[in-house]
Length: 387
Ligand code: TMP
Image 1 (cartoon, rainbow, N blue to C red):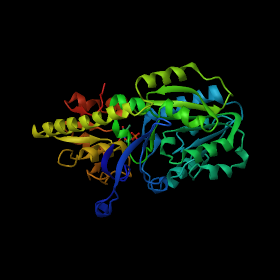
Image 2 (image 1 turned 120 degrees about the horizontal axis):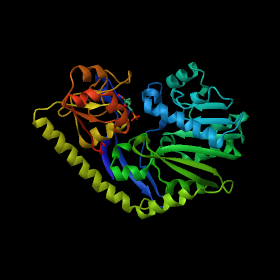
Image 3 (image 1 turned 135 degrees about the vertical axis):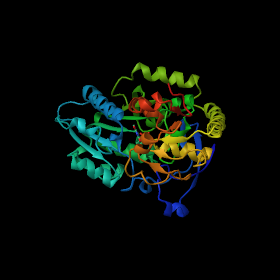
Image 4 (image 1 turned 90 degrees about the vertical axis):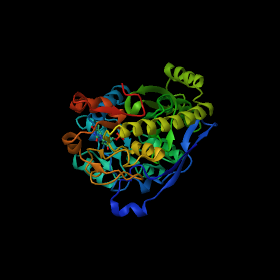
């Protein structure tokens, strides 16, 4: 399936750069062999995670709390005194900072220099590098004696999974585990949240794909825990083959995936139809609101919003501006459709009639923060159900 011409999802830009903007054809495919939903072409991560990469995990209070719980869970289940812990894609250290008061020997890998620097300034030990087989080999102190390698919303960004798994193999102790969380293919299909698909998300994983993939390298999927983050994610736990019993919920969730055809192409064909339906509904609804003389803005210039705006071709004819809290985005324009990104003051001082909530995965936090908008008659809009 193709979504048409797309710019990089985090490619917020200035007016002077409009004429040089880069576009690619965003097309998704499905490998029936390992049940893997993936992009057919993508931007190399080194062109994305530069010093300009505009994303800070700590921009969401909810995610800060989630990472505190995730850390506690790892501590309770898989770490012991003096354990070695590595986080792949540690961003500003939101997860690792929870280990600062423990004796865990932790280390983060973060490719964006500015973000890694910020973490190091807060004494969260961070290497400014991509995690791969080569960089893992340099960590002689951690070789085959790391108890936990963890990640969140990062593994789907790594094109060469074989290289990644070799890096992990080189560092994990014999009973070490690799734990990672990623948005779930099943949640994307059921909510028709195709905005999860963009250049940085090369894969949308399911248990079926993760089990088949890691089995190829002599690893087992030993546990899988559904999470509410990013509109529905799964926390996967991977261990060397035959080292741990496989928890019952793995086969239960895999059976459920088989029932829903998540392990084969049929679910993708259904999803394609649903995406096309969603596009015409969004456009009809927004045009109707606009024709009624109402003002529409976007709330949160997420990477995800880039897929919606460019696939549906929504520009300033429908949405006046998008408000966001990230200082690197404010004053710039959204990739592709060039909607101005403004600070949240504009939204508060001069509220629109309708706000398209692009950060629908943070809705609880945002609805609470913006309760006056609703109390004063403002309406939230989204292509996913907002409950
Ligand atoms: P994410 O969906 O990839 O986590 O991106 C979140 C984006 O939403 C990020 O640009 C910050 C922005 N944001 C706001 O502008 N206001 C908020 O209250 C929250 C939670 C996020």
